[in-house]
Image: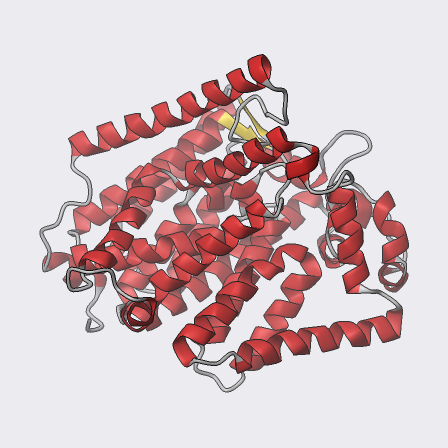
Amino acid sequence: MSTASLEETGQRSHTALFRWPDILLLGARFLLLVIAANVVVRFVCTEIVEFDCPPRWPVSEGYFRTPRGRDLFAVLAVGAVFYLTVRYLPRVTSKIAYVVVVGTALVLGTNLIQGVEDGLVRPIAGGGEEGIQYYQDAIQIQNPAAFLADYEQLQPELLLHSRTHPPGAVLLIYGLNRLLGRPWLVSAAIGIVSVTLTAVFMQRILVEELANAGLSRYVTLLLLLVPAIQVYYVASLDAVIASLLLGALYCAFYARSRASLIGLVLLLLFSSFLTFGWIFVLPIVFGFEILKRKSAWRSSISLLSVAAVYAIVYAVSGFNYARSFSIASALENPEGFRLFSEPASYLFTRLEGVFEIILFFGPFLGALTIRGLRGAVSRGSGRTMSVWAAVGRYPTLVLTGLAVLTLLGMLVTGAFKTGETARVCSFIYPYLMFPVARYLTWARPTLWERKKLLYLVFAQTLLMQTFGHYFW
């Protein structure tokens, strides 16, 4: 496809993404599915077998709230920003900088619906007197170098979140707090950095795939409106992780700079220092490189480079990454593999993880994702397309498949013990958007249809942020 603008793309099309009766039906079905799943799971938990079951399943950590008067003023302010975004959509999507500014404003704005304390401070520094957050551990650090050197001894005594992560999680919050001095500023900084990196990397990947800059920026804006991104991209370390892992994908396959391999190594190193869940990206990078290039030399060099850096860190400071991972695994599952120790909790938290991701993605983008995947199959000359052919024709859809399979594999191993996947697994949402982008290139909806899709996605976000509170 040529580099036609988003406006031109819409003018050549007559496809309606969702007609109003379909919107009502799809929305109602989605809501009924969520409610029915909650009722069934809660019934099983209370009447048949007890297991780890949050009251608002599949939302792990959240509760309903009644908005206050001042909250409604914030809703109106955010709504006004969104209305202007849609009103001037061609202008907003003309530059990625505009998308970043709008996306950042909306992410901060929807969280501020709950006020500074509940929207920015409590998510990063709350949790009662003892606390459970990285922040409470970070403010106890006297010497960062000593913290790194003694991390394996300190790890079991750290708070709930810190103990199952590498030291970078606490050290990042420590550094931001020393720099900014206020929890709400730390939360805002995380949101600004995460939105910016995610938008830039997503847009660059899509431009390479779709050869349509306007559509790429539009899909990037859609990604930033996803409820999971709006809710969890402020105050959450997982937002930083998700943006770094998306950057690693970009450097692995889409960056044209000769320094892309260095960028890949650095992004893998930074993300691995923040979370042990960075391994999510490894099967994707290795698998896609093998399918695309029939080799895995770049992936192998990158992984070996990361390992070499940690070997140097161990020699200098004494911090052993592998041992820290082992400690975290033991702390996360003290009774061993949950399939054997707690089979009911294992099964239903796996389902919870999948359902929460779907809930925070929403029915309309979910439907377009399915359409994009089906469209690729239907364009395979009437037969199932081979993986090798798909890599050549629809590479991002292959990446989506690899990402979904990897995430399911991680869930099977018992990762994400208590669910909370809309936050912890926010790295999956760009991959779910790839089929949406592909479908839009085929459908070429009108400008009004594209605006209507923005309204549908953001309406769910606004309702969830107005009537729900989320804590981690």
